Length: 172
Image (cartoon, rainbow, N blue to C red):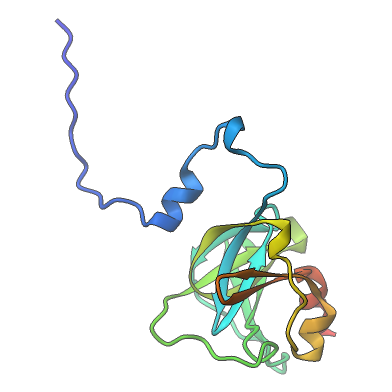
C-alpha cells in the first residue's frame, strides 16, 4: 500500500514578478517579435537589461569602501569569494534612491567582467513590442552616450543601456 501525503511547507506564494520569471513558456507562447527584458528601478529612473546581461540578484551585502574612489563607486563586495565593484548610478541619472524600497544588488556581466549596481526593489520581467520603441527624452550626457533603446509602457519610459560602456565611463 503506497500513500502519497502532501505536507504544506507554510511558505507564502511568490510575488507576481517572481512567479512570472519562474513560469515556463511553451513554444507557442514565444513571439519572436517581442522584446523581453529585466526591468528595475534606480530612484525614479526605469531601466531595462537583457536577461543574459544580468547574472545575479542578491540582497545588499557588506560593502567595503575604497579610499579616493569616484563617488559612483560605493566600494567592493564579496560574492561567493569573488570580489565585485559596486556602483551607485543615482548621480549619473540625477535621481535618488527611493527610501521605502529595499536596496538590492544586481550583478551585470559575468566572471571578471562583472560589476554590481545598487537598485531599488526587485526586478521584474517586461515584454515590449517593436512599436513601443520611442525617441528618448533628454538624459544626462554620460547616460545618453550609453543608451541603446527607449520603450514606452503606459505613460512610463523605460531605458536600456550598454552597461559595460556606462560603467566604463564612471571609472575613467
